[in-house]
Amino acid sequence: MASEGCEVQTKIVEGREKKFLKGGRLHMYPSGMNMYRKSKGIVKPEREEMKFGDIKKVVGSAKPHYEKSYHVENDNFENTISFLQYNTKRDF
Image (cartoon, rainbow, N blue to C red):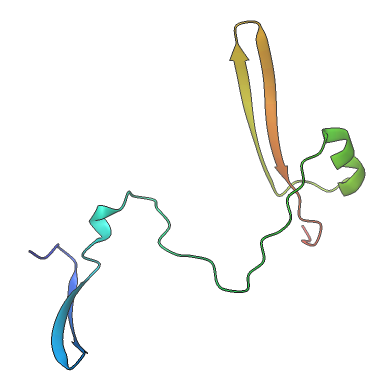
């Protein structure tokens, strides 16, 4: 049972010929799922949580390279949560 657009490849595995269906399992994963991992040795940047006023002191007049906000309302409670990412090493 071969899926449309899939390519059958033949390889020698432990001295025996074996057929592989390239891309044959892709339909098992949800669309939009990342099919890759990060490389070894890549260090994730350190994340810091701080108050908005303190952020402006650190980054000065730099513009964020990514921002997202959520507005939350529940009975008599209302709040806006903002995510801002700054990269001070990147020139804009």
